Image (cartoon, rainbow, N blue to C red):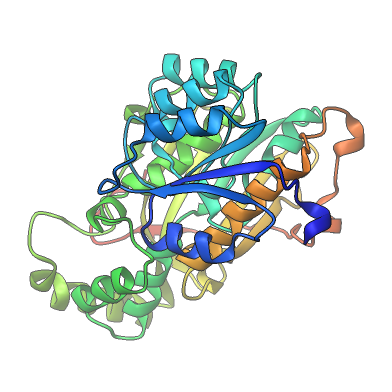
Length: 349
């Protein structure tokens, strides 16, 4: 790995939770780990930034789910410190704050691949489509490995409350599982992708339906949820939490749906996520990206990949030479749209 890494690159990590711990275990010794901090550390984020800015080359790595870090990123980038992050919230900040962040990224690299697909390459392929002049028309799929895991567990007969507990223990959920269950996490991912293709929308513009009602304790929903899963299974349908970004209509929606077994999302298992891009070039056979979409290990590996990209000093391709065919990536398959029905009594978006 030494050939890939610039030994002068200093690394400062914010967050020592599930993803942060995994990342620290993966960091190669050729990188200079300046510090890893959390809310209990004597060194705070501005102090860490000062330390990084004093080095010839450094990267700030955010493994938290904290709000308000867009100001920290902007300050880092303006001081020439690269930023790698798995934190979605700065990228769904109000458009003015996001614009300032992207403007600051002219001074240093800003990488956030893991904000949508954990370890899956989701954002860079989308950027490639835009850079090379394609017209993205529709983005859809199952963006949450966490909710995919819950849906799979429910299909096996696992009670809802137990499935959520297990998902949290395995490190699949956000620190507060209600962020996942309410659909907020998927809404953020949908908005991140929508903004990548030029839609100037805010988080409040996303139509969100929760995975399940949050008006009652999860234990109180176990039996009714299990009965609906059994009833729909008898009709050849499974539960999936689907996201849809209609670029032409400028409409974003996320919510639970019962899908026929012929639907591409019906084949997902465990924490698998699915993202598809329908474009002018990929109209008949949309680009399809599928794989594990949750978990500390895959997310940390994705963060490390971004850190190594910074270490190599690589920049995103700016010309047609950067174009890559979906066939070469093994992700182009036909996406049909079988009828799906709302889950748990929610109306179709």
